[in-house]
Each structure stands twice: as structure tokens, then as C-alpha cells.
Amino acid sequence: MRTGLLIGSNGGIAQALIVELFTSGTVEYLHTVSRGKQDLPADIGTQYSDKITHHSINSQNESEVAEFITTCNAQDIKFDYVISTVGVLHQNLSEKVTLKPEKRLEDIDPVALAEYFAINTIVPAIWLKHLLKVLPKSRAVIAFFSARVGSIEDNRLGGWYGYRASKSALNMLIKNASIEYQRRNKHSILVSYHPGTVATGLSKPFQSNVKPGKLFTPEFTAQCLIKQLQTAEVEESPYYVDWDGQKIPW
Image (cartoon, rainbow, N blue to C red):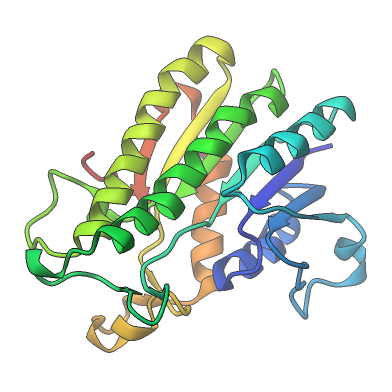
């Protein structure tokens, strides 16, 4: 029975992924992870909702992640597909600090920079550290949501220091971990995924600047990702690709 794990399961794209994972036949059971309770999509249907198990976990707390992995291991739960949609671009951290893309060097704030790395880099690193214990010996795919702006080679515009740097660091973690994953589980596949600009809260402040036809629905994004995960090959791991399957330079 193919089993999936969706980390960061209450966002707009994640909600669409829950539906797509089942309707595409990619998984038969799904475990979801978020800080709070799970809000299921309205159109998921009872035939699928009964096959979803939710876990309230703060992914910034490694002990909670480790405890979850230990429990899964004890119950012999293995994940054929793991998707993490966790990420942050803008957020009010306090009355004095707002997380938002920097336009110039003077906009860099150490507190905001630390938050970018805490969410966009360190959380995926925690999961990468522990997931090896709950992968099957057969094919397993792990995908993290990255961004094209995390590409060092493709950077032509500058700015967005914290977001770019934290996503570049995420890409390096994935690239680096793939080497060890290949040694310890030779059928594993790691994916760094750029979904494009999707009509969710993360991109809302910037949607007016998106070219016609380039603002995607969560449903379209979910379909694109699942198709790629279904056809990903061990020999090509790690992947750094966009929604259209095009390779992005690291």
C-alpha cells in the first residue's frame, strides 16, 4: 500500500495536493503534518478522508519530529512519497520586525534573516535528518518546495536577500543529502521543486506583477508536481526543477 507524508499540510497548495495524491492514485494512505489541526479540502470525500491520519507537530522542534519518526518506525510505517510545502516569504514577526523581501542591502535585518533560515532551511534539514528511518527499501521520493530565486547561477536581479539565501541553502542541503541518501537507501530520490507563482497567501503581495498566464492555481501546481514525482528516476537524483519539468541551474 503506497503511503504518503505531507509536511505543512494546511496551506493552499497542500490542500490541493491532498486531493491530487488520492485522485491520481499516487497514494492509498496519507499522513499529514502541521502545527494545528488538519483542515481537509471540501471535495476530498469520505472515501479518502478515512485514509488520512493527521499529526500536530511543530517542525521547528526536532524532538517532536524525532518522536513522530520513532512512532512510525515502531509501527512499520514507510513513506513512498514525502512532500514538504513549508516555507515563508513575508510575515509580521513583531511590532518592530516584519519579514518581507529586501530591496537593498540596508533592508537586511538579522532577526528577519534568522527567521528565513529557520523556516526555509533548518526545518527541511531536520526532516532530511530523520526521514531515512521511514523510507521503504524500494523507490521513495522526497520533495521540498524551493524557488527559482534560490539558484545562484540564475540570479540576475539581486534583492530578496533572506529568501534567496535560505532557498539556496536548502538546495545545497538537498544536493548534499542526496549523496548520503544514495549510500544509505539507493532507491531514494530527492527533489527541489519550484512551483512557479501560485495564487496563495505567500504570493499575494506580488501577484499584480505576474505576467498573464503565469499565476497558477494550487490545483494546477499540485497536478504538475505529482506527475513529476511519479516519473522521477533514481539515476537523476537530485532534481532541481520547475513546475514544467525544466531543470534549474543550482
